[in-house]
Length: 194
View 1 (spheres, rainbow, N blue to C red):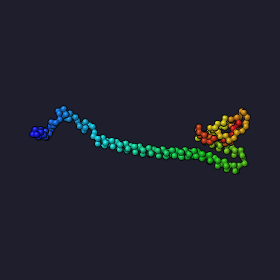
View 2 (view 1 turned 90 degrees about the horizontal axis):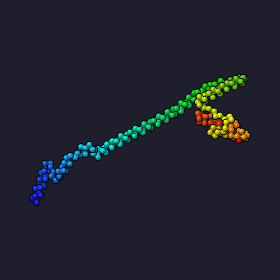
View 3 (view 1 turned 180 degrees about the vertical axis):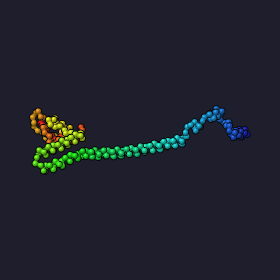
View 4 (view 1 turned 135 degrees about the vertical axis):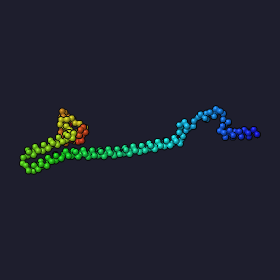
């Protein structure tokens, strides 16, 4: 019993001196040479969590800014489209005003003149001017005279027995059709031979 007390006392003294005799020497060397997590440059779990939370906050902020920027872009492009539509309409109407200006003297001349040929000539000039205006806007009449019936451009209002050589051909056009570029904006109303 006395031996155990002496051993315990010696151990406590050595612990007080900083030397631990219970661990073998190999453990002492590994303890001394192994760096701690902080010394090796590794972060503690709390530091990792803080770094991840900071990264999440940064990404959320970036996402919020991107959403706001996209919303602003969408509003701006919608406004630009609306302005473009309004301006395009304005430009077309401005170009039509001279045609109206030409109709005013023509109608006044119709009331006062007895020379029908002069009035007829004036109306033809206005019509040519209007056709020229439509050409500038890339609006063209759909050809119907002697053309094959085409459902992409023509609307058949009736059929007419015209013989074998006129079968499937346009016989008459009751209302002209028009294209804006390659797009049909009004179908030509036609009579088709059968």
